[in-house]
Structures are given as structure tokens and as C-alpha cells.
Amino acid sequence: MHILDHVDAASLRTDIPEFRPGDTVKVHVNIVEGSRSRIQVFQGVVIGRSNEGIRETFTVRKVSFQVGVERTFPVHSPVIDHIAAA
Image (cartoon, rainbow, N blue to C red):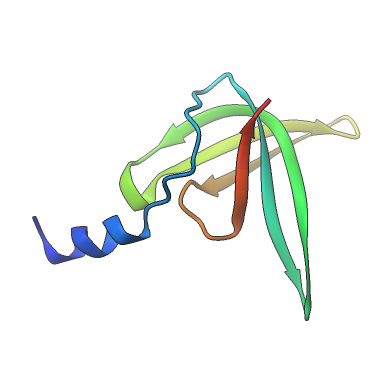
């Protein structure tokens, strides 16, 4: 095992629920604007997951005001407050 694998393992989150493409999730994202911070919820359908380990990402799609919006999140990002399977 490489030394970078140990560093990556320390950064992995353990509070991520199991979800697959096709599942509906609510992603609670911490948004920092200047000195203020707030939680923004992005709810949609998971359309894909890719990579593994610290580099793992997932893409969520929703329709907002009749416009499709896709957003890709790193699974282990500290910006994500929590993920809830809806």
C-alpha cells in the first residue's frame, strides 16, 4: 500500500448512505458567502457515480423552472453537510 493511500483513507467520510443511479437524494451543501454560511438543498435523481475512493463523484439531475440542471458532487467533499435518500 502506498503512503498516499493512507492519506486518502484518513479523508474518507463514513456518514455517506448507500445510493445508486436512479435513486432520489437530497444533498445538503454548505454555501459560504463572505462571512456568512448557509445550507442549500439540491434534490434530484442520481444519474451516475464514477471513480472510487477519495476521487469518487456522483451526478444529480433535477428540473428547476422547466430547465434541467445537473450538478456533480465529490462524495467525500467537506462542503457536503449530509446526503439524505428521499
